[in-house]
Length: 145
Image 1 (cartoon, rainbow, N blue to C red):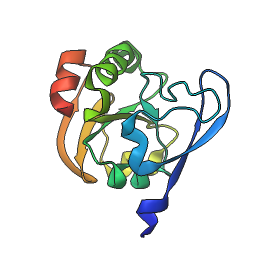
Image 2 (image 1 turned 60 degrees about the horizontal axis):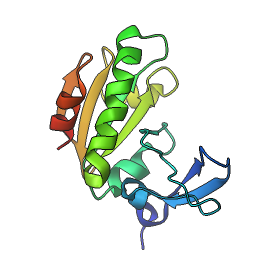
Image 3 (image 1 turned 135 degrees about the horizontal axis):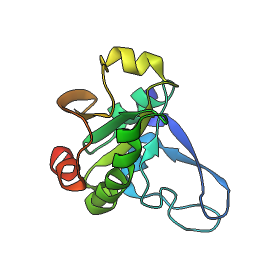
């Protein structure tokens, strides 16, 4: 069993506040809280960082769609509801994640992020598609599918 197989994410339950360790490879499977049994992601994209990004992106058994954004970015904030809607529509067929480009400069540099929002699709940890600018949920679903 390799390092990528054992990497765990710490997800805080939005319902009861309990911390849950979830294997990175199972993040797209709709994990539930071990304490209250409610959905951990609750239809919201997973927030990733410089520290846990590679473990999740490489281990995900489905495509990963990354939204590079920043809190001060108007188009990013405007697209956030569409991104969450796309996550709910896709269910477990893709994993939608968000990376705050200001807080995670190593990832932003590695992916050559020049403008935000930028969506990057990864298959097996490798970039296969890219879309810059705010887009509707239908475009996000199509990009992730």
